[in-house]
Structure formats: C-alpha cells, structure tokens
Image 1 (cartoon, rainbow, N blue to C red):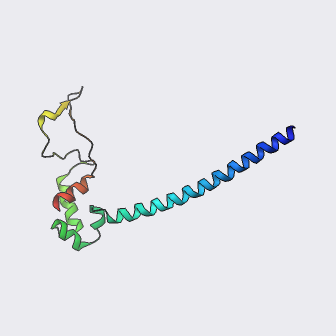
Image 2 (image 1 turned 120 degrees about the horizontal axis):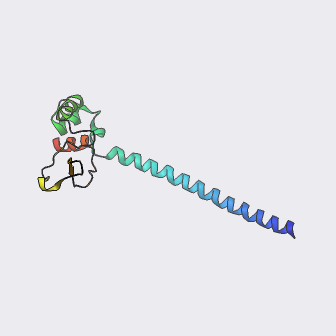
Image 3 (image 1 turned 120 degrees about the vertical axis):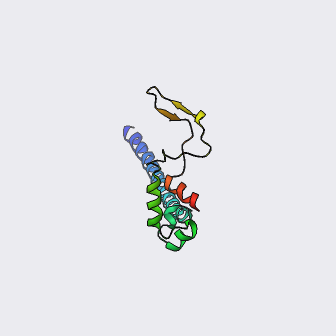
Length: 124
C-alpha cells in the first residue's frame, strides 16, 4: 500500500513537472517575442539617442551642425544630472516649499523624460 501511494505521488509529481516545463518553454518563447517587439519599438522612438548617429537628422531637427556641438550647448546650460536645475515655465514660487533644513523643495510630479530628451524636443 505504501508503495502504491508512493508511485501515485511520483506519477503526479512527474506530470506536474512536465506541465511546468511546457509552461516554462511557452513563457521563454513569449519573453523572446516581447524582447523582439521592444527592440523594434525602441528603433522607432523619437528621441535624441535614435538620431544622434545621423548628422543630417541632428541638423534637421535641432539646427545644430552635429551631435557634439548640440551636447556642448546642453552641458553649458547645465540642467543637472536628473534635470533638477531646469525651471519649467509653469513653475511658480507658490509651488516651492521648504523642508526642515530650510532648503527649497519642489512639489511636482516626477518627469518621465530624461533631461537630454527634453532638451532635444525643445530644439526640435
């Protein structure tokens, strides 16, 4: 009786294992498909990174002769690592509050664009 119970548990575990292996294969195929779609969409994305290698596109969209010249201007403007030095036109002094140390803290939603892309879109 113990042997029959053990064999039954073993066959149940083996069938579950086969089903899980099939599911893993399906999920791996899905991951590969999604990675391929992601790569295709990134190629179509309108951002600085996609046009940086093509001088004619940089000139067309920004008026700058090349990517390097445009980045020199960007670095001169110094928006900060994550755009903390950028003052947006809709920012008002009323939105700025002070923390416990007396340092100003902006109350705004986080930005979804990188500062480089915001600069690029401003020039476009």
